[in-house]
Structures are given as C-alpha cells and as structure tokens.
Length: 400
Picture 1 (cartoon, rainbow, N blue to C red):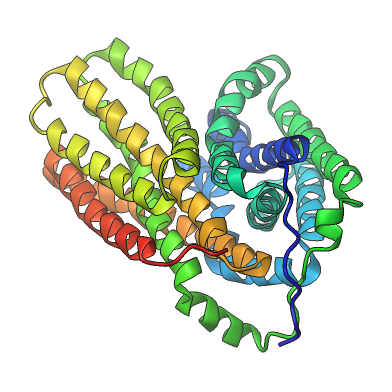
Picture 2 (cartoon, rainbow, N blue to C red):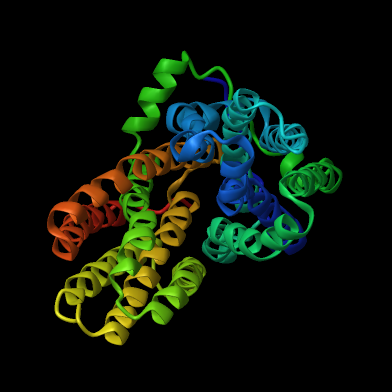
C-alpha cells in the first residue's frame, strides 16, 4: 500500500460549500422523488400497469445494492470531486433524455443508470462535507446532510407537483435535469481549487477489489454504522406506508401523511445537533432505537384512540428519523482517514438499499397476517438489533 498523507483539517467550516453539497444531495434524491410524485402520470402515459411502472421507481436502488462498497473504493482512487461532478452530470443527461418521454424500455435503462449517478453523489458528497467541516461541526453537518432525502420528497411533493399539473410530465424531468446539471457545474467551479480538496489524500495500490471489499466488511469502523443504518431503512418506509392507514379518522390520516415525513427529517437534523454538542452519535442511535421500541409498543394500547395513536406514531417516526443522522455522524467520528470515510458511506448506501428492499414486503406480510401487533413485533425485534449494534459501535474509540 502506498503511503497516505495525513488529511488536511480545516479550522473553520466552509458553510457555503457544505450547503452547495447538500443541495447536490437533494438534487440526487429527487431521482427517487420525481418518479414518486409523478407515478400516476407515468401510469397514464405509458400504460404499463402498476407493477412495471413501480419498477421504474425502485430500480434506481439496484446500483447501490450491488455496487455500494465498490463506489466507495472508486471514489477514494479517482477523487471525490471528480466522482461527484461526473455523477451529477450523468444524472442531468439522463433527466434530459427522460424529458422526451422515450419508450418505456429506454426509460427503464435511464433509471438503472440513474442508480449509478445517485450512488456516486451519496458516497462522494458526504465525504467532501466531512473534509470541509471543522472537527467541532462534523456531527452537525452530517445531521444536515442526512435531511437531503426527506427535503427532496417535500420539494417534489410541492413544487414538483405544481410543475406536473401545470406543464406536464416532461417538464418535471426537464427541470430536474437543469437543477442537477447546474449543481455539477457550480460545484466544479467552486471546489476545483479548494486547498483542502487539492491536498486531500487519494488511496491507491490497495490490492484487488475483492481484497479491499473483504477488508471493508471486516472493518468495524465502516461496518457498525452501516448495520445501525440497515435496521432504520428496513423500518421507516414501511411505517410511513402502512401504519397511518390504521388511523380511523380520515382527516387525521391525511394530515399524518404530511406530518410524518417532516418529523422524520426533523429527527435527522436533531440527531446531528445532539451528536455534535451533547453525546457521541453511537449513544444517540442507542437512545433513538429505545424510543422507537417504546413508542411502537405503546401503539398497541391506544389503537382505538386516533389522536393519541397519531401522537405516539409521530414520536416513533421522530425517533426513527434520528437514526440516519446518528449513523452518518458515526462515520467521520470513527473513520481514520478520508478513504475509510468514503468506504463507510459506500457500505451505508449498500446496506440502506438492502434494508429498503427487504423491509416493506416483510412488514406487509406481517400486517396482512397479524395487523398492528405484527408490525409492532417486527419493530421491536429490529430495535433489539439496532440497540445491540449501537452499543458495539460505542465501544470503538473515536478517530483523532
């Protein structure tokens, strides 16, 4: 292995650059959100049925599921800024193609390729944010970064829906193309001569790809934050999708569909702030999983009281939202160099896609068989594992 220089540390957080990187993350998450908000329009235009059209939404995650770890290694070898800008520009080209409303098989190909674009951003951008953050702000900036997914869905649910209703399906993709391409150009111009990034080490000559992957999976500094994150991704989408339907009050049910994603996003930012100023992120994750378990079990006792049920459900989702903020903050806290950070984010992306794949069908099956007790039982089991891996991560000495 070639010698790696000590990473350059900034004494003052470069907030403008961090904010631009966060916006780039929002633009990448819109690759999921733009198809979610336009799902009915896609059904009407392509006439492919709900299953195939649904595939066009979920197929973006395949790249992260298969190549998450590899993306971290590639980013560390070729440079995080190159990977980030390339991923954003690729995303722009694919959105421009989608704006022409091509044949459905071509659309599916663009969605598969968008998975690589999205993966490049979620591996490179948080690594760059950590580099540009002063030590006293890293947990806070990771908490901010962790909100990008929820913000993307909120923006697409508001502004994106207005564009869809006013100008049609193609305009949604065209506007996204301009946004994500613009972020790629802006970040290249802003960061290309940044001394922190120019002097940052780039790992090389670390052996075969298989050997590197095995080392990453065996590295608890990368593995444990990803395992903490895995059980969150198994749960959040399923809870947001299935549990609100159990609220009998229709008005309250409709309101919770808006409130719950906002609570999740707020929890992510809150976790970053707590991890920065009050306690280690591992302890934040531990407390969050305990909160999820307690609120979830309490739902069984208030199932026939809609308002109290909604309050406890909101508490559970707020605690769930804290887990990604804590997981993201763990990586720069525990990683010993930028290459290890990138590997951690790559593994996080892979495990996140794994959880998002296995979680919803598992929860759906248990809800069909057992109703609310089935969901609460699985939530409780998942929280046991979340608490366990949070405690194990807490035993690792933080990097200096």
